[in-house]
Length: 473
Image: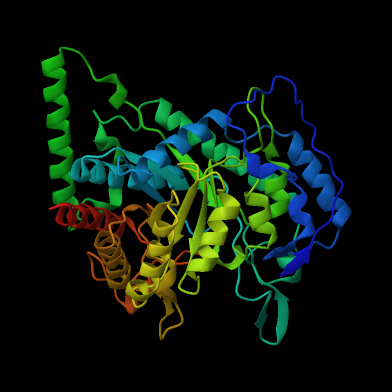
């Protein structure tokens, strides 16, 4: 959907106590609403614009979901990842649903990311930046505005922020009140994650807390538990030598991310804060622009250029070097470290052809960029029995080739962006259990895109370790 928005809605902001440090000069002539003068792609058509404005005003008064100091801490860590001093692990559901705001599902998702990060820390000997695709991933772009079944045409399901997946006229009608519900569920998700982390859930002294009940007989279980034992032995050794507990191992930083697709929501959560210049998107730490909405003159680019968060852009095989450089100029004119991440999603069959010119263009201009591989979205296909899926061999191949391309050009692949879950799903073909098309029918629960399960996710983490080790030799 293409929409042009116009609004005179003002934000209630106290601009006193602002400092002059770290000014975002790119935000001149910019406001959280300036995107409304541009063409906004992938936005729903709300039937009642007065109701939409009322919801935005309500959201603008609600507490933020994250803080500016958390955002700036993440930006610093991403700058270190650009230098090869950290590795970014970004993962979670393709699209959250309101019904998934449940403690078991959230903790299982956290367990998978913790297990993957332990594998990466152990194998890469680097700190890992952990970023979850959760607490706000409630809106999704769609290929078409409408869906047809049995001759009935209805609006497409665009995520729980906007409408509902059931194929009825009432369910598919965009409802702005759903943004308030999404904010509440994002807050509950973040509250639970923070409580788990603060309570020692991520304590390296007790990685057994991260075990998932259903994977006790996984083909990868033994290898993973050997790593756990090695890490545990190393921790105990260091504590014996130092004569005290290593208390900094009892928690882990976790950050949130989502595609900032629904611009009315993002605008309402964009604010100034005391003792900081500029505007922060306080709905998430790390928002990104999707491939469908990364037009240099579009509303999303206009919105993103003015916020101080670290930001990412999904780039596919159709992006040209010139387009990429223009995006970098607009979104990071000061060439600030940690500000800009490019999430490449080329597809296993195109990565060696399409990626090198983009890397060379960024290198030639000396742009500070974190390169991250999304091996999921370029490898989506439909099976003969009608399921949308991804082949694990293609996921692995794109990631493997991406490491090789960067290494050959003297560049660095500094992270991975994955769609995954801690549930026992069968949505991606192949992997440790060699899932087939027949297996898809057994446990396919995603409402949008297929996700890797625990075993496939852990196998990817092990692949990263092996590949980085081979490249470093």
